[in-house]
Length: 219
Image (cartoon, rainbow, N blue to C red; front, side):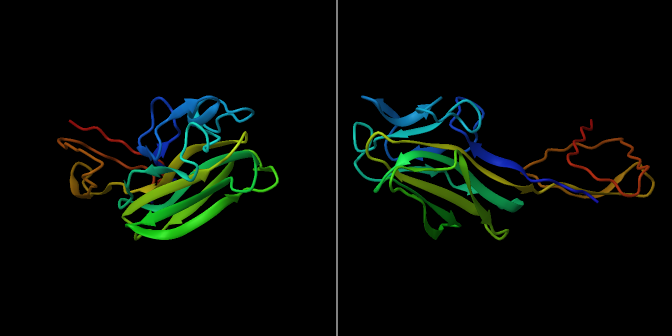
């Protein structure tokens, strides 16, 4: 038996390195005259929820926006080799009023799942610090794309951080012959594993083993 825990398959935490899920912005990164639509290490009292940076938001009706919704759109992500998959992102808003809004739209295999208004600003609304949006991805899904839309007017603050997909990735299934010296058959995800096998012996002393990760290098 093999018990496998969900892992981060792809992420973007707005860091200078280490992210592997590309993002596309309706307006390029901008900090101008106190207005912000950009990578930041802090935004007033907001600090990163993960890592050392996040995406800062301040007055998109000023020098860094088009007086409407600005968007962050992920590249399309292939999740065909994963199960029990979930999409997440974190957001933080501080003092948002009428027409200060945050919404998102998820696409499964190119089909919109509908827009969801996550923050409908009113009367200096504050989130409970960083909050997390989660969207379960059906196992039959092959491709996922996320669009986050934000509009904010005036001197109120916001942030987006740690966009990620977690799931259980496909793992090699290897059966061994009973002589303990030969791999009789294998079912290996060739997109994830390169393997060379020769003259190896594998012995098992426990009838039921639980593994989180297994790497075998043979030459």
